[in-house]
Length: 143
Image (cartoon, rainbow, N blue to C red; front, top):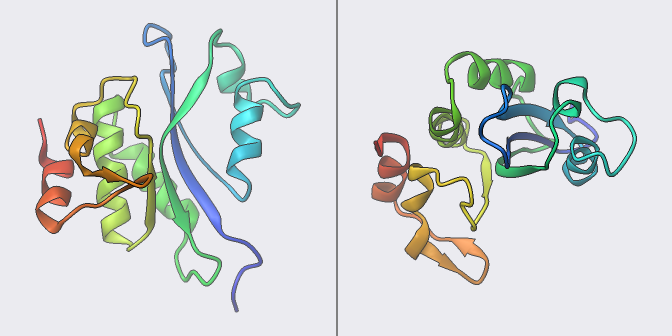
């Protein structure tokens, strides 16, 4: 039986790298609303992101379709437990997108200087990154 809505599994990063919690992985039905909550623009701000001055910006958002047979909690746990630090979590997001065949939304700006995202610099056209299998390999193996 299909679920009612798509889910969005996301990685956000804080604009101040020196804070203790620099990245956050979450899962939600309404990502844009949740991002506003993380940034204190709406009520319902998560405790872990509340303490940080500055703002949170999305790096990767994975769309888990409502027709899913996937366990979103399992995927989130896999992302959180097998990666530490910004670069590692970005790479793991790409690995999970490929493993579970998920639509992957990525920031074009790369203000956090994530090396894995540098692979996409020349791939953007009309607001989308067009990647080949070789590009995917670089995204997950780039050091």
